[in-house]
Length: 265
Image (cartoon, rainbow, N blue to C red):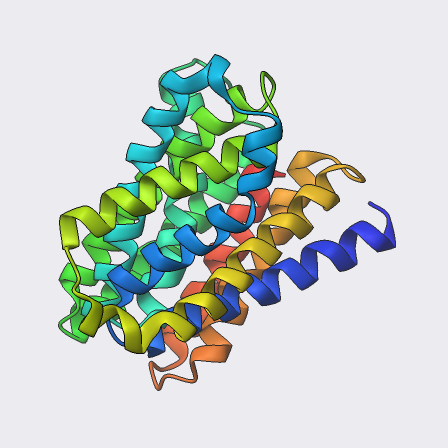
């Protein structure tokens, strides 16, 4: 993995951990994340006009539905619990499900590294779930875990779709549809939206910047290497949050980072 690819991924992890911490600290996280998605979707709209994803509209709708649930669940998890509990669980559940799915559903024999990663990942997630239970944050633990399931859903759909159409136009349409769907369900009035527009724009810049850097890294390194190094954001998110959760939460985040990295590498 080249030094430039490593720097791209590490910068992306800082942005990803940063926008999640910003989302957690602010009020109304469900609406903020939807507005942030809408902001990025509108910025990328020229790409959709030049190269509309008409040939994969069925997948666009499916991904939009999964991402809509992702936004709502992640925002609700952040409202209900600590960032140091919800963020690592939301990030770590996805590679756990992918690894287990390949093993149990597709009869893919896991390598020694994958098997080790699954064990480490489960221990880390259970440790964090224990911290959440002690802090009366069971709802956040469940919501974060289901968020990871949504991540697996739209990631699988997107991986298939971007081979058939332009990635930026596809992303723009999905972000607009999913965010409009969430805002339609939430129905926030302008008196609720106006105070958080700037906050949502900052979160959107972090989202878009992190994703763009990862796309650049994919062009310079293997997908597994990029995905593995991305897991550093789990520990960064816990450090940025500065929550007094104790050493168990930090060790849980470290185990999730290591385990997820081994699974996806």
